[in-house]
Length: 338
Ligand code: SAM
Ligand code: SF4
Ligand code: SF4
Image (cartoon, rainbow, N blue to C red; front, side, top):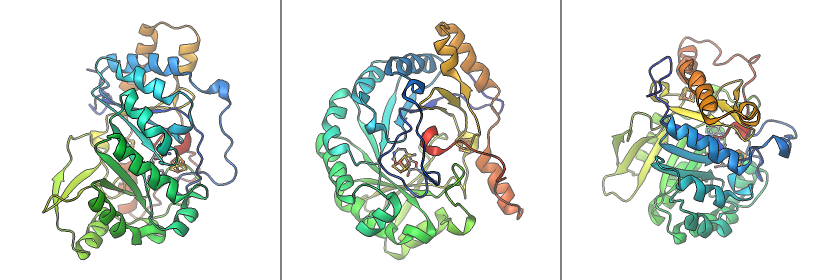
């Protein structure tokens, strides 16, 4: 089994199928006009499938499609059907902003997808506009219910919490999840990319999120992490009416259990969400390399991996140092795949 320098296996692969997005979320998008990648730079569906097969032979079991917004990529259902057919894939899921789900939910289910994460940061129309800059809350809600109707289970709602922006949405979203049978996952706001204005004052930590829920009468029991490589810590209400997770990447980093590789839309292999560069797998692939050569390249990158950014960030925060070096340019989330 392939292991990195800190003994972590390669188990999960996040594939960004596009760097394009129909939203401009304030916590994700770089400032100014984002210039997307040239079409010729983007991996073709067959190239993604071929790389996925090689990753699975190297030990990957869980595959997640993401972006940008994965549903703006033409042929995503075809890709899902192909990935479902790969022997060894135990879990295939997709993360979406939900805006195009109304029309995609059934075709995605038909293609074999069973797990969806849908981003929902607010139930308030005005706040939705302020966060996403484009799109409509109604389209997202329609998408969420279309997913339920199509048979997706569980439907997980992802809510990024920025203290100064949508902390008052924690309780309404938890109630919404409980009312309709959706799992809810609150995500601590992270310093991804270079221009999302992160600073510690905008962080609402897991413990504070739990306090807010407790004050609103949610009696939550901790279930821990499902597996040591699962980012979310799980909770359940005493009466079982709501399943909830918190991804506390900042206050309780989980780098020790991080078995995740990322493949960007333009074919870079990236070993950390906060990396400043990736290894150009597309160049190897398009140079006519055979599967063995590609496999060796991936192995070399993974075996050299030492990433533990979030643990280092917490160490810096605790010692009163600046949490990050502004001179160090990170890859943008929209390109990297969240
Ligand atoms: N467009 C899709 C969506 O929004 O679900 C998929 C890509 S998005 C980059 C993947 C996930 O990353 C979303 O759940 C999003 O909320 C989350 N995300 C983006 N920026 C973040 C940040 N600064 N901190 C925490 N989570 C973030
Ligand atoms: Fe928002 Fe997702 Fe688009 Fe980022 S990629 S701007 S989180 S919808
Ligand atoms: Fe993994 Fe990097 Fe996140 Fe740590 S900071 S959990 S190494 S992606």
